[in-house]
Image 1 (tube, one colour):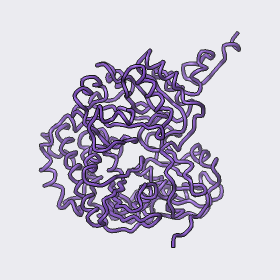
Image 2 (cartoon, helix red, strand yellow):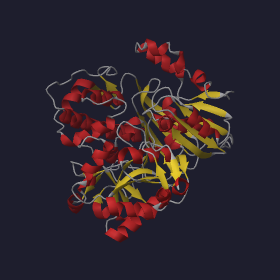
Image 3 (tube, one colour):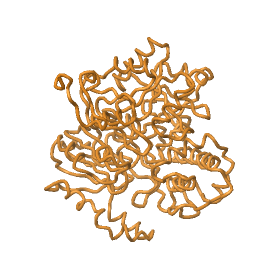
Image 4 (tube, one colour):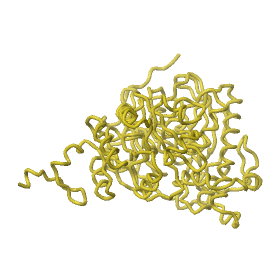
Length: 519
């Protein structure tokens, strides 16, 4: 007998690790989910703040809070790892942190880290039955886990791999070895891989991996791998660990599906942000669901769902701060026609790391110079790729991929020869692109922009990247958008865009004065 959901206001919270977030479920509906960094403007902020708390409170005081992991179990693992400063740090205890923001704490429950991941995926998926795989750096002890999901709310753990055997930690160690920031710039390592050769892949497997299924490493890489293979180039090292990642992800997910006997796959955890590896899974499962925020910040949603112990209809990723109004289609098109590049800040902010049209920097993908222009604006390395956003029905005319939809930029597609020739800005060095398909359901405003753009130019796509600068969080509010416009000289279309002719804004973007008042 299926239990009825508990219709309360439930907050799920992920914090005190990295990339803090809050999700709110009210009367079984997902009504809010947002990242702390978007409010504090501190990249990957692991703490909550008054602003995100106050926005969450607009949906009601929580009847219950569910924390995304078990902090004392985590401290046991930290003690085993010799992380004594963390073990004795009382500031990272949830209740102490929450008391800074809430005058009266409601009951607090604690979920297992990997179960939060699993619930965030399974309870929002379209499946009645699924294999659930979670791959990340580390929870309390789990690093890999396999679950069997049955509709509506049954998650059965099948198998785990535990610390220190962690593929997420291994990939992060190579991120650090290649001069990048671990736990933040793994996606840059993935992009760098296209410029190297995987000549060290077999050596990496020999030196570090005892078994992929189940995962067992030969050594603890939590503290890094030092100057491993000092003669190797960063490009070849990145290509090599990426090749190992793709092999591991496919083998482990096949292993999981064999254990459950179910070919519908829910895939979660930080490793699920590797869109190149994700693409390989399209060939081995019947269908796949990756919730658009599969990393630790998405765990706040999983925790909230576990708190009500029932599924919630997935409403889409636009769950954060709202900039109201009508999507500014005409203004965006005009700016693209005039200057090739413009920002758009409209509607509710995306929950997850990808900008999907509501906090996006859009550009005309045609021509040889547009990629350099956008890289210059965003202060990014020149080797990094940009993503195309395309009308869903036009996907197969420009790309080759084993799916007809990719609304959340989770997979890469092989660009056809004419696409490479005509749209070089959105094709990576390896001839692929991280496509985002758009239907009217996915984002009606962005869909209309693409339709009008297609009518005017016969081009069904735009370059879409996040409205931020490297090392900074995405734009969240109208004020953030206005500051971005004045700091970087790129027009950002928002609710106030049509009023700009009537106002004068100071260089810091902090003061608006109507022309008529000046007179």
